[in-house]
Amino acid sequence: MSQRFEDRVAVVTGSASGIGRATAERLAAEGAVVVAVDRDGSGLSVTVEAITGSGGRVEARELDVVDGAAAAAMVDAVAADHGRLDLLANVAGVLRFAHATDHTPEDWNLTLAVNLSGPWFLMQAALPHLEAARGNVVNVASAAGLVGQAYTAAYCASKAGLVMLTKSLAVEYAARHVRLNCVCPGQVDTNLLADFVFPDGADPRLLEKLLPLLRGAAPEEIAGLIAFLASDEARYVTGAAWPIDGGQTAG
Image (cartoon, rainbow, N blue to C red; front, side, top):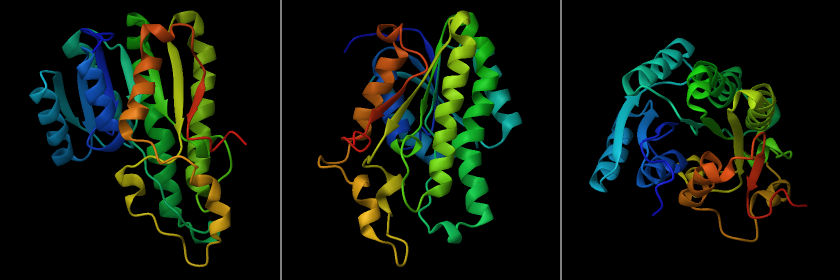
């Protein structure tokens, strides 16, 4: 495999499972020093074991991304320990399916905190370090941040917010040589969707576009796009919201 990230330092949130784990593994396989971040310590241990077993370089840091002070401290500590920060991949996320009138305040607040505020806290802390290294950010948004999707009002709001946050910062930091992009997956075979059930009384026709003609993506396929956007091959790509959704947003 090519070594596009040799000796570069990459922070990957949500690394305990799914897209986050696949991304951490892919970047490590391409030479990055990966800082695997998640609040799930046991899941992080599995990720670290897989990467080290393949000869990669990785360290684990437990963090709940909704804690802004802890997120900033973690970013600064990584930059201090390694002398640089080249990549921030914000992958951690939550998803709740419910009728709009059944979304609880707790669900709403948690969804926006993890999917939008968490990436913001991390980016805000990381930007000075990324500017010094001419690094970049890749955020994992969603097809649900580009088109409406029934029964996921909070999720759609949070991911649409992340898309526009990415675009805003991409414009602000273009002259500072920091690129910011996001990927927008559709259906992905991860634990996030493993327990999906229709809300009581839901109309399945409203979710037909969630289920593309193709099978759902594997986490490794999303990780491949993240690696491309983070690499020098994408030098001229910034402010993009890149769908990888089997055609969900094509129509």
